[in-house]
Image (tube, rainbow, N blue to C red; front, side):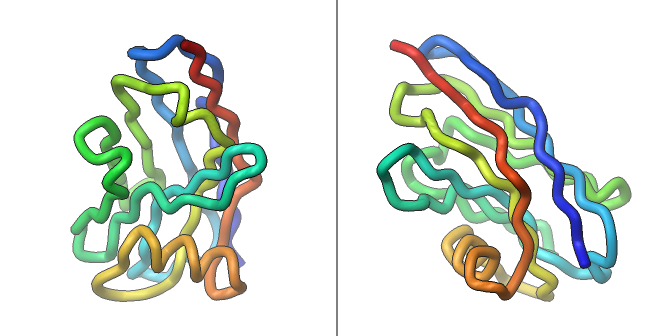
Length: 130
């Protein structure tokens, strides 16, 4: 089993920055895909980012250029560094991990983590005010 714990959520004004962190523990295997998805109240889940086992990163177009995923494989942690936040970024942010080698897209990670093929954390809230 894998446990994911998120931290760093909070409230910020539009244009501001916030960094979320995710720490994984348990049997992640040597190769895994790790990233984030989010869900705003009343809206569908949205895949945000995934970092695959080769270090390649896949971002949603809605966050590309504003969000950066930084992963430390030795510590099994991933930070999501968010700049130029917008009110539409307001959501609960969930860390996700799938034990898979090779390419992993942000959409694939979210799909597997929410359908029993991977793991997800409890979420951390982000609120961006205008």
